[in-house]
Amino acid sequence: MINTLLDPTLIMTGGSLIGLVVIAASLLRAWQGWLDLKRQELDRTIARPAAEEGSGIGTARIELADLKERIRKLEAIASGVEL
Image (cartoon, rainbow, N blue to C red; front, top):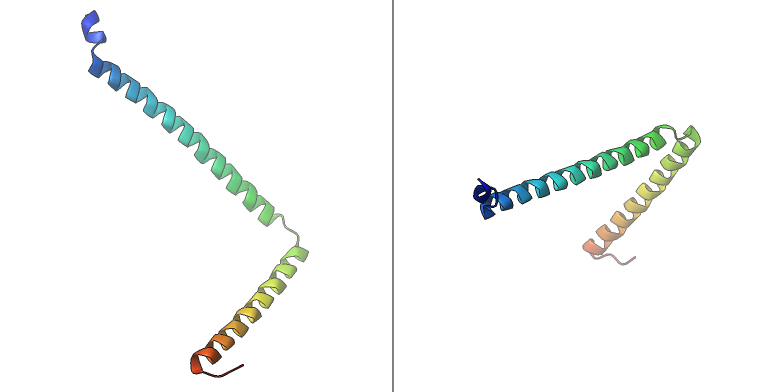
């Protein structure tokens, strides 16, 4: 009876099982933390006042205009026109 409890295969199996449980528990805790972080980000986004949304739209328009200008320049370079 004692000899079978100290069998190296049984000890390795038990240790592996304990290690797997520890890793699974820590991954679950990390997943829950990540979900909490995303919930906080969503709450901050939803609670943002309307004034900040307007500035975001303005910034997006400026970036879009900048991208259009870059495309025009690249098309001019591709067609061989000097700017």
